[in-house]
Length: 454
Ligand code: NAP
Ligand code: MG
Image (tube, rainbow, N blue to C red; front, side, top):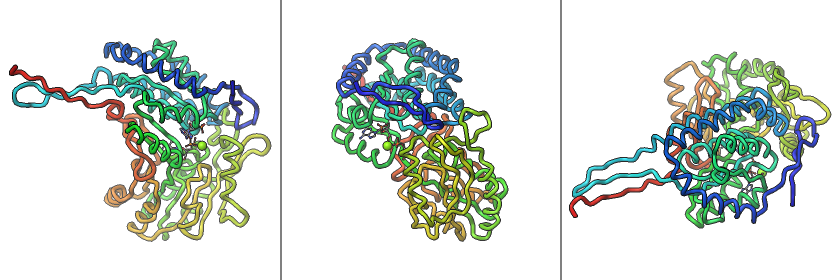
C-alpha cells in the first residue's frame, strides 16, 4: 500500500503517515456512495437538517483539535485555523436550513398542474487544494449533502489530516458512512476517477487554473456538471483620495495572510501616481511589522509556506537583481520560511505582476486616473477578487462595476463570507459557491405536468 508522509512545514518534522487511496479503492467508494443514494434521499427533510446540525455541533466541539491539526499539517496560524474550523461549523449550520427549503414552483398551465422539483444530482466528487483544506472542503460537502447528494472528498495529498478528522466527526454525528467519504490520495488517481467514473455526476474542483482546465475537458466527455474555483492575481486599487494610512496598514494582510497562499490574495497593488510615494512610505513599516514565526503562537500573523517544493517555486520569482523594494522578516533554520516581500516591477508585463505566485510577494505599480486603474486591473486572464480604496462613493461604485472579478470589497479586503456568493470571472473559475443559492448547484430542476383532464 502506498502512503504519504505529512511534514510539518514550520519544523520539517514528520507528523504522520497517511495511506493513499488506490484507483480500485476509489471505484469501490464510488459504488458505495451510489448505493447509499436512495436511503439518503429518503431521509425526511427535518431529519437531514438535524443530522447536519449535529455534524456542525461535532465540529464545534472538536474545533481546537481541528485547528491544531491544521497548524501542524499546513503551517496555518492558530488564529486562522480556528476561523477555518469555525467556518466548517457555520457552513453546516447555514446549509442545514436547506433540506426543509428545497422548494419548487407551481406554474400556471392549461389542463392540469405544473410543478418543479429540485432533485439531487447523485454522487458528487469534491477535489480540494492544500491552501485552505477545511473551508474549501466544506464549501462543497455542506450544500451537496443538504441537497440530498452523497459526497466523496479528496483532500490535497499534502494536507489530508483535517479532512480525515472531519469524516470521523460526521460519523459520530450520525451521517451514514457511505454518504460522506474522505479519500486521501493523489489527484492523478482519486481525483481523476471522479472525472472519469460515470457514476460521479458532478465534480467540484478548487485548485490551479492549469489542472482546472483538464478537469473541465475531462468532465465534458460525460457532460458532467462541474464547478471550478481557480487562481487569481487580484488587484488592490488605492486612489489618492483614500484613507492612505488605513490602506497601507491593511495592504500586507490583504496579501500575506496564509503566507500569500490564497487565491484571493491582493498580490498586485495599484496606487494612484500622486499618492505613490506617500503610500510606499507608509507600507514599509506595515510590511516590516508583520509577525512571521511559529504558527502555533497566538501572536503570529504569518507562518511558513506549505512545502520545500513550493518555496523553491516562489523563490524562483526573485532572481538576482529582482526589483525588491523592501522585505519583512522570517525565521531561519528548519521550516519553509519566506519573508513578506514587496517588489516594484518596471512594467505591467513583468511576471511578478502577471503570474499567480501563491506566496508572500506583492507587486506595486502606479496608475493615473480611474480608467487606467480599471484597465490595469483587468489586464489579466484571472478575475477572482480585488479591493478598491477611495473616499468617493461614486468612484467606488464605478470602479466596482468596471473591474472584472467575482468578489470585490471597498475600503476592506474581505472576500469570503459563507452567506454571500463566491467565485471567479474569466479563467478564475466557473460557477459560484457559498451564499443563499449554493444548493442550486447541487440539484437539477425537474418539471412535471399532471394532466387534470383525463
Ligand atoms: P492543484 O495542483 O490544481 O491541485 C488541486 C487539487 O487537485 C489537489 O487535490 C490535487 O491533488 C488535485 N489534482 C491535481 N491533478 C489532478 C488531476 N489531473 N485530476 C484530478 N485532480 C487533480 O492546485 P494546488 O497546487 O493544490 O493549489 C494551488 C492553486 O489553487 C492555486 O492556483 C490557487 O489559486 C488555487 N486555488 C483557488 C481557489 C479558489 O477558490 N478560486 C481556492 C484555493 C486555491 P494532489 O494533491 O495530489 O496534487
Ligand atoms: Mg499542484
